Image 1 (cartoon, rainbow, N blue to C red):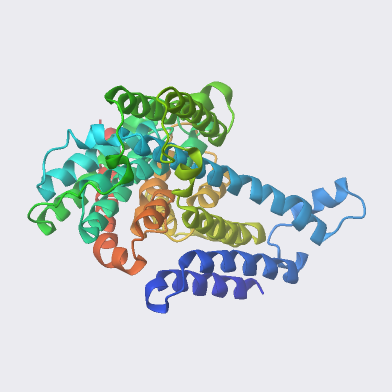
Image 2 (image 1 turned 135 degrees about the vertical axis):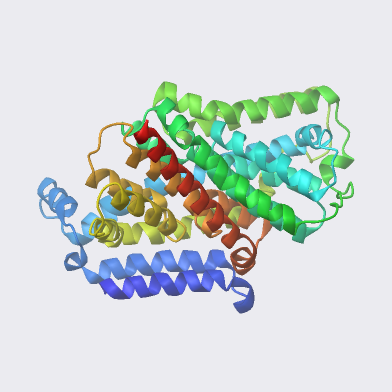
Length: 449
């Protein structure tokens, strides 16, 4: 059963990748994959577990309980709590973005981006994404940038290229900021890295991992983009200029406040996101009540109906599947096996970090990094922790389902897995390796001086 779970996981990923040829929606496949793997875990029993410590502790605290009780009343509830944090964060961020968009807020930005040259626009949007991701996070930034892309680029094929670069830039931007990616947040809160050191240690390598793909795509994309026609509901409805400014500033302010809220209260980010959504929601109700709007365009029911629910359910399926493997112990074994690489320091730890980055494009980087944090006890700001932050953050760009940003863009823009693999993955890999090489070179130079 242990091996069967791995086989089922690989088959499920293959079916997700072949969504368009087999004409089965990836969300349905992901949900089925998550369900089947948890069923396998139940059928396999406690003999399937690599580490039974958690189960034994639960049974000791709950006399009469067994393996099934531990799975259903403890482990699954714990997993659902972690998964729900991401899902509600995603739901809140998407709804905030839709409220801003419905009130014409994003048009204030797109009106100031006048260039229609593909290469120039690519650089502008990528650099904007890179720095936004460090302040917000890569998931929120990717959602915002897709909303902007829809207003800037009409051709869907062109927009896919820009969407691919948004994924690369968002993950690169999140890797050098202590609040830009879930793995850097983990390392920061866990005391493995300090805020200033992670910026100093990984900024240049993260920038290289974005700039190299940008240079490559600059030779691929030629000509000018076609702006979309004014067909959106938000373009047809009349709203005052002050309303557009209000909702853009307030909406972005709510998104920016989420990491600040987490730092101040130590509550999870989705709580801050829900708070920001409530503020923007109430503001929308008050503003449009005062302006006597009779149209349904600005009602929250209409706005929520535009949120991409299938993408959220896709997250649910994938995260359930990965957590099933994590519960049984597959991911822990994978992380432990990396420690047997026959190299001396620092080459061994550079290799481990690079491999973890590549693996993070296939499975969730969170359990991999968590296992690594439990295995090693290097001091704060050791180069290993900084390199793990870079690799786990940027490695997810290698596949479109390898990061939260990628899954969000894939769902919102319906980008094909195979298309991304052919056109973006190899570019992201070159950037990833270039950034890794830059990080190692920096460490060599620092050691020499």
